[in-house]
Image (cartoon, rainbow, N blue to C red; front, side):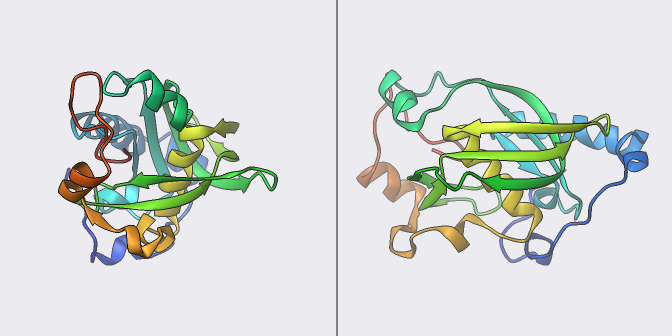
Length: 194
């Protein structure tokens, strides 16, 4: 499994929905397990199928390790642990009354760069899980940001399409000019989002 990077056409097209029969098939179930392992190996909190060259509406998501962040960063980002789950054929619903928050994002498909992206702090997602069952997710804070980022991938949208253009920077310059140090003194960003 390899990450597809910026410039590959699969990152810019609308992904197709999966049928329940496809979802429960051995092929898709194996793909879900492979994506889970690959996301964890690459220190991501989310991975959309187009990022590995598959033009289908499938996302794996997990955000359980925030040990690289200070309590202040966790509070500022409204970031809390989210257990592993699968999101298929999602419909994103933005909370019209939600405030907009701006944070730097990165992406495994655009390695080495980051940009400041405004996103809604509160969303709901109607989707199917890995068993093809309907699920409704209500998310706030960093979880809402992550869902918006990953669902965008399914529609051919990258964070660079939503970022404030003048904030686009290398990870090195982000660390040099925008970095907030963690308890360990390490950089506070991950490969998906800071």
